[in-house]
Amino acid sequence: MCPDARPAAPATARPRTLRPALWVLPPLAVLAVVFLYPLVLVVRESLAPGAYAGVLASGAFRDALGTTVLLAAGSTAGCLVLGFVLALIVAFVPFPGSRAVARFVDVFLSFPSFLITLALLFLYGTVGVANGLWTDLTGAATGPFRFLTTPWGVLLAEITYFTPFVMRPLLAAFAQLDTAQLEVASSLGARPARVVRRVILPEALPALVAGGSLVLVLSLNEFGIVLFTGAKGVTTLPMLVHAKAVLESDYAGACVVAVVNVVLSVGLYAVYRGVSRRAGAHR
Image (tube, helix red, strand yellow):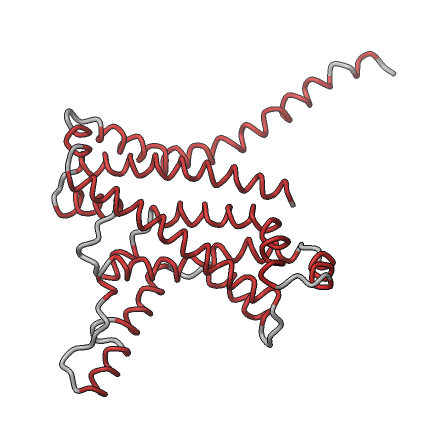
């Protein structure tokens, strides 16, 4: 080999080491401008003198925090129960159109939350179908269905919208379940409830926890459902941010609530990622 050819190697290696950095810098710059810079502005605005003390000590903040946590916990519990039952039916109960239903679950995940709320308003709103049928049949001036403007209406809308987020990982877990275990358990005389409890539930538990964690994060930050239901007495943390920023022009207070909401969301998202990794490891 000619000795003059050796110095050419570093010259070709240097551009190869620089190219990845050149490709990474533009996305990082866009991320910094679009996301990090506004987030820094929110945090800096929240550090105004007395902002945290004034907001965290207020009754409105405590009520909004309690309402947010209760709605998120209730929605998660409802989605876990309903999603598990529906996923069991779709995966293990043969009926015409089961595959179409499973595919519709994937499509449903792309729907905006306000679309579900509008559908519920058409059904159970003050001038909705249910109240209209009631007034037509009884001759009453108004119908009895008024729960959509209460926390129960928000809870119903959130459970309706977020249940497919639990069903999706469950259906994926059920698809990988060894059906031989189910056949053996049934041949030994185990009832369906016991098969579900002893065989299906342990295998689906990681996916169930992962879906529930995701619903908890999403419902904690839900704004459109609360807004479109018109539940004026229901104030969550996102609604409090909107009220302070738009209605009261208290930008420092709005930023404090937003920072608290972000901290809660990031913490729950970390839990969700950890559970998802464990679920993937079990698979």
